[in-house]
Length: 410
Ligand code: CS2
Ligand code: MG
Image (cartoon, rainbow, N blue to C red; front, side, top):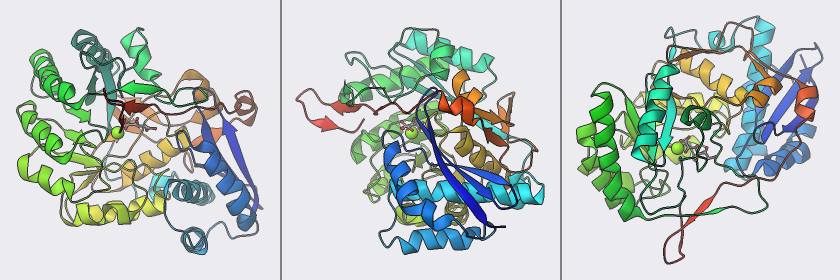
């Protein structure tokens, strides 16, 4: 079964998405997600100019060989653009193989290891009262695990909290951090104010919702190691499911200091793009959850390798699933979530109505659990007519400046 056609489809229903569609000489098609928030066009060029010409005529069944060819023949290795492009090819080929086998993809990955995939939703609020309402709204939608992000007194707008004063439930479903503008938007940040405020937020949340509800928080790369150690320790009484991206993890040794001071579980990796980014923090058990998405780590083939490596150190999955992972990338995650043994939890930010019209999906969300469905392949089809209605729009993630004007991680 040979690859006959490869199309890179860019569409922007609720936000920009990059989708690779492969068509084989048997007529079977496959989809892969290559969306890289704020740098989508880089992946489009990488695919169109340097990958698509090499795919035509290749045997669609040779997934591993295609992966190794694309990874090694480029000479320049790793990085978010390269690995998102390779991921799009990898996932499209897995979609094709599963359709050819007449099975949902998870069956080719070892079959189901569980009946459902525990999801967590994104509750947030500029104030603690708004946050409590958002948590209630997410519980009413069925979520049984909830990420908590709060505004900080004195700061205008910060990551994870929508500036719009709309109904919390609706806002969270359409909170899209990338903003459609010619330049990135500047937001403000003050770590000391954040560190003073956050424990009071979790005190209020535990007071209102009790000790059982799994709560997560995303530090979003903004703290130094000692600040992360302090926050992890101060949040221990609130028994978090995880504290995510507590410090920028290019410096992997930094997690040793955090680990020495706190037993709050740590999740890292959504900006990582290969197993080499994880080598030290997995081998030294400096984290508890692997945060990468299928889309940003070279696809199902490579993220599976990372998760199998992590399993040897009792580290679990926490696959990245914000709205900038397309329904194709999300479906790939769900098939992997269902099959692997060391599953932890799945992030789930529901896409908007326009996106769901472009991508027809078979997954379900019931009582807090996701399931990819039983359709052959990924279970996602792209409506090219709908997609053509929403052309690409320049959009960037915000960035932070401190009070003195210094640029800071957002
Ligand atoms: C966040 C992401 O979901 C998360 O954990 O870190 O929403 C992140 O901000 C976006 O994916 C950036 O594009
Ligand atoms: Mg995150």
